[in-house]
Image (cartoon, rainbow, N blue to C red; front, top):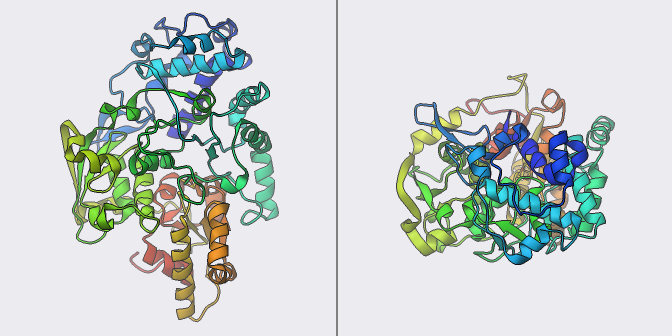
Length: 522
Ligand code: F3S
């Protein structure tokens, strides 16, 4: 089972236990139909379909390239050697009010959500539920058939009048028929493949999400405005957002699967474990970045993710790229690029950067756990990692056909930077149009700001073939038949990790965009 299948199966199995008896094996359905009373299952018996709930197929890889035996849970809470049977015997403490909700005080739907949440907390050894603040972020963004049961469950919640405790943000939609996929072939595939998109969007409207202009994975951008105060407990999903939120904003969330984010948003509570605890935020790795020049942020993120899997790294040697230890609108994309790579090549949900990120600023090397291990990334190691980025195009020596920039979504600073880089390079080459289309992924809110403040540049970008789109790049790249039709290039290590699109540093990518050719030796 691959990672994405695991997410789909584990979240659906978990949610389905209490809410969708019609979709379940008879025994589980019978259990789900009974009113909740005692609080937790607590029998220690684990149904076959839930045996994998404690880990995914992410293995830690040692320096020799062999698995270390560490298994990722995908929540950010390592559970090496744990078994589902043992975990199911754990019982979290509930307050009187929480027990009353479980017993049906606030209606049948909320009782079922609470039942799921308590089971989830027990599995991961949580001691209690905590009240959430700030605002949730959801990665329920794909209206495809495999999400049907989850969408149905949330639709039942919406029909019962349930809502998130705060207005929440949602990941970008998986397609864009306005700006990019507006040809007959793509549109047909989209309408056939994402038949439930309307139902899903309708669910979000009723549960408390804003309009589609706010759709993005980079919900923490100023233009979107979901950036809770440091220390706030929240329930976020989307690996890159969780990773940035925990690390750079200093919020406290686990890496929730799709659906678990909204269950917690509706209840306003989350089980306290893993990255929400002081202990769980300690670093098991000291990562020393010792490159002679500014590192390739995607490459070092990939290196860290592969090494640490889902353990927390404490990274040194990067503070010089953040003047005065400050993360600003002009440099946040560096951490966004590195962090999303750690979260996609591994399952890192939190990292500390010495002298820069809030936990590291406050506690320094006290954030290192006892017995931590050390990993050095120097020029040689960075080059070794880049050399593992294979050319996955089916026609290996073909010319590139499209560029993908903005996974996670571009910041305003990045949009302007790329606009200038490409249009100035075109001017220099005596051209007005890029050799290949350039897809710039960003929330509409960022696009709107760019138009308002830099209208002339944005017009020039558009004429050059740079398309602003608010969809998810990987969902586009993951469409059936994509790699047969498109030979993509990107500067996103995350996109590289999940697709056949090839990764290049910014300066090479600009050359490819202008000439339509991969420079020799790149
Ligand atoms: Fe965002 Fe999609 Fe990349 S949600 S992080 S653009 S995979």
